[in-house]
Amino acid sequence: MSLKDYIGKLTRLRTGRSGPHERPHKPAFLLAIMSMVETGRMDGNRITYDPDLYALFKKYFEAVQAEDDTVNMRDPFWRLSTDGLIEHSPNAGFEGVVDAVTSPPALKKWRELSSHSSLPPDFYHLLQDPDARGRLRQAVIERYFASQAAEIEHIVREEQGIGAYERVLEEMSETSDPTPSAPADDIRSQAFRRVVLRAYDYRCAACGLRVILDDLVLADAAHLIPFATSHDDDPRNGMALCKNHHWAMDRYLIAPTTGLAWRISRCLDDRIEGQKDLIDLNGRSVILPKQPRYHPKAESLQWREQKLAPA
Ligand SMILES: [Zn+2]
Image: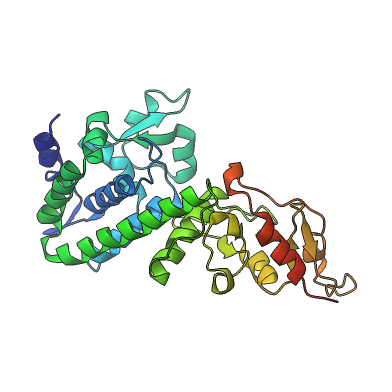
């Protein structure tokens, strides 16, 4: 299908309605997909229900929602297959079942049916081309969100900025180039957070907790040497930690060492009731990212180790 055909499809989405109001879910989801492609955050032509995509969808959705619209990504993600804009790949044993499921399944069921989805190959191909992508995006904005065009364009530009810094940080982990000049604080901290959390697959490097609710993630992205001291957003100066372990590391009660094990401060005392969980961390291995290029760097680990609070 040609660009013109896809513009036709995008401007004739089967949206839900509430009186004359068209629900914005499907077009907002498509804007999120376009930003994912634009900033190189799609893993090839593969879309998964992940917190990055949810956060991006929510950002567009909140810019365009009417009062009684409620944020929900399952609906547009699943139902865009009936518009011929998404294909859900069935897991082994569920071939033929996926197409028959018309309402979006609960997430547990979704994961059982299908591990990922994709765009029709010619649509994916068109979105790679900046000019075609711009025209497709413009068609969606003009058709559904003409009165909110300025807000949407602001999000598009902000995402371009965050995405560009994400690429810089990812490339840093392959070289030893010094930190390049950083963009504005909110842009750089969002990019650092995304790269580090993805590298650790949203899992705490101390206890292994991994909890995701839509766009909400239990783990934080922590700097090993604080940014204020190091000005270093290299993902190897970062670590994903749950709220408790982030708090404890920031207060120098626990530290990852150059031997990639956890050490605890001597000021923790196993005779004090309630400190056992932190004390038990002593000597345990750091839970590392799958890709070695994101493993923490020695100088950052050394800094943490030396800073452990004395007894
Ligand atoms: Zn933890």
